[in-house]
Amino acid sequence: MIQTDILIIGAGPTGLFTVFEAGLLKLRCHLIDALPQPGGQCSELYPKKPIYDIPGLPEILAGDLTKNLLEQGKQFQPGFTLGERAETIEKQEDGSFIVTTNKGTKHQAPIIAIAGGLGSFEPRKPLIENITNYEDKGVSYFIKDPEVYRNKRVVISGGGDSALDWCVFLADIASEVTLIHRRNEFRGALDSVERVQELKLIGKINLITPAEVVDIHGDDHVEAITVKKGDKNIHLETDYFIPLFGLSPKLGPIGDWGLEIEKNAIKVDTLDYQTNIPGIFAIGDVNTYEGKLKLILCGFHEATLMCQSAYKILNPGKKFVLKYTTVSGINGFDGSRKESPKAVVKAIV
Image (cartoon, rainbow, N blue to C red; front, top):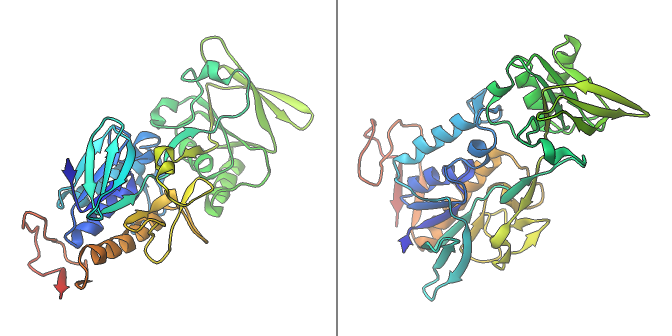
């Protein structure tokens, strides 16, 4: 039986940052993730994708963000159960929970933090009859290594942030980038939309809207696609077709835990992001509330408030004051300190 103070389900950015925030409060964490390595989508789906909205970092690759978060939390010695999915949960007489994975590994903790991002996910695929014939043969639903597309012709389909950001990124790598979207308007950030339009004007991106891909051609690999624009069909030669229509989220077994669910997300109280079950919290993209924004930055904020509430639950009557985190050294669980002799936090009884 693995025992810890906070059991975190999901080792994406929000889950990893929870380790650090909990560590400041001297709380131990253990993480469960169905993927074989930490980082969630940032590691599994797009490790080379640039991220622009992390405070203090004008640009960072998703994979590097994962590495930094792991390094930041390492001093607090978190445990990991990777490659296993949280399956069942049982409430104990002492108020703690036992979570068992699909491989039978049992974990006990008084606090559960569900940080599972979108949950288990599958790509949303366009309704093209023969698309499955070309999967891994020129059709991809994620971009893990941009170098695959160096000096190649690439067609991206989609209108959200992922499609826009990858078009901008690949404009300097691929020999030709074409973006196809069903509407003239895009759903992505205004800055990304403006950047795509700028690249279109200087001839670095081809933009076809409103239009959609209706057929794929080629023998053993994608060679061309058919694009329907109004009443016309356009034959467009390409080496790769990448439809980026987002993910279909699925809570999986967590959806059967008795939590209040709304539109496949877990409802929480914005005071501390606790669910309808005391002691179980949901942070990051997996939760929902009025005004919710699915941003990594918001997940970090939610993790911080959640940890403060968890401390109060675990230490009734004791107040833990977080004075500042501007010093360079922070006490780890082994008593080690990096540099500064100053205390960062103190407990007040």
